[in-house]
Structures are given as C-alpha cells and as structure tokens.
Length: 272
Image 1 (tube, helix red, strand yellow):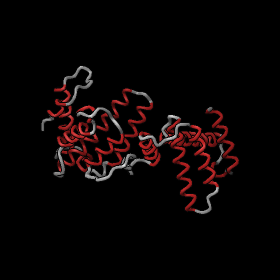
Image 2 (image 1 turned 180 degrees about the vertical axis):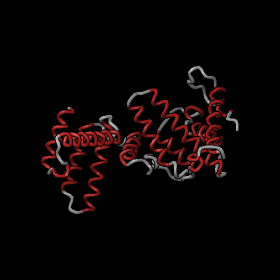
Image 3 (image 1 turned 90 degrees about the vertical axis):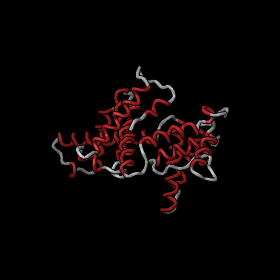
Image 4 (image 1 turned 135 degrees about the vertical axis):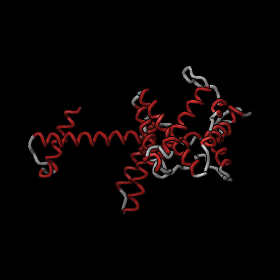
C-alpha cells in the first residue's frame, strides 16, 4: 500500500523534510508493523487485538501528558511515536479483519477536519463551538445536538467533568467571578456534611467533586493531574516512612496509628 495521501496534506512544519519523504517514512512504519504481525514476526505483536491493546492506548496518552508537563521535548517526541504506533497497530488489525484500511483511517480524518472547519475550508466567516457540535451531530445522523457536546464516558471522571464544564463555558454558561466558584465549593461541602443517607452522601460527594473540578479550572489546574500528583506524593512519603521505621529496627505492623502518624510527620517535615 502506498500512502501518497500524505502529499495532499496542507503545508506543515517538517524540519526540512519534504512531503514525499514524510509519506515514505509513514509507509516504512506501516510496513514495519506489517512485518511484526506477519508469519515471521513478533509472537507478542501477532496475538494482539483491539481489545488487548485498549489499556496501552490509555497508558501511552497519559505518558504523553506527563512528558508535556515535564516540558521534555525528547520525551514528547518518543511518546508521540508510541501513540502513532497504536494508531497504525489498530489500523492493521482492522485490515486483517476486513473492517477498514489504514488508508481509510487517514482519508476519513482529513475529510472530517475539512467538514468541521467550514470557516477555514468553506464559506463561513467565523468559528463557534455550537456550530462544531452541530456539524458532529449531522455527521452521526443525529437529529438533535447539544451545545454542551456528547459525553465521552470513556474519559476518567475528573477529566470528563472538566470537559463538560469547558463546553458549557464556550456557550456562556459559566461563572464570571472565581469567588462564586469558591462559594459553590463551600455550599457543596456543607450539603455533604448534612447528607442523611447513603444515597444523599453519594450525590453530594459527586457534587462536591464537580465543584472542585470547576475551581481547578478557574485556577488553571488540571484536576486529574493534580490528584495524580497528590497520590504519587502520598505513595512516596509512605515508602519513606517504611524505610525510616525499618532503619530504626521497628516493626511497622506493631506500631499504632499515633506512632505511625509521628513517623509520617517526620518524613513530611524532612521532605519540605
């Protein structure tokens, strides 16, 4: 298969490479993966399916986010390659199952980009998020569309909450003063404390999390990443606490909560 479709893409930054070379390099990647899936290929690669690769797609996406947060260009380059590998991997699996071709994946993407940007490739004068969602709904044959967009339930809950809030904000449904956001967090916290039963607790806890995600958005913080960093910090300090207890010849399981908390505070103070 020859991927000359790449030649027709708009002009891009390719660091001195020609569009022809870019297409040829993609073809080399495609052929490499075909060989890995072939009769004399890699035993691991040959047995993979769409289902078995799902966790790797998610993992690679998070590793790219981590590289971006670290502002590590070399690592970003590597992780982008890993994500591209997943795209080619899944496309080749689909070809083998007579579902669709890699060529169709690329062609479909190009056409979708053109359709969804009528202000760039068509006669419309400006962009709006509502128009974007309207176009998407028509593509999927849906008679109605919501300005808030369609929920992607595969997203982690905190990321999903942020995306929904961002979408609502694009059409003007948003706080204008961060103090109102703080007040909403405090309100939801009070309602959680006043909850009477398990059902109310579940609902109010979710409302509090949703309000906190909104606050994170106003503070220019990604709630998912922030929670991940907090969890990593907890694990790091817990392991340091274990090491300190062991270095003193103490038995972790024999210590009560107050004694463990004292060690925790020592570790916390040393780290700070």
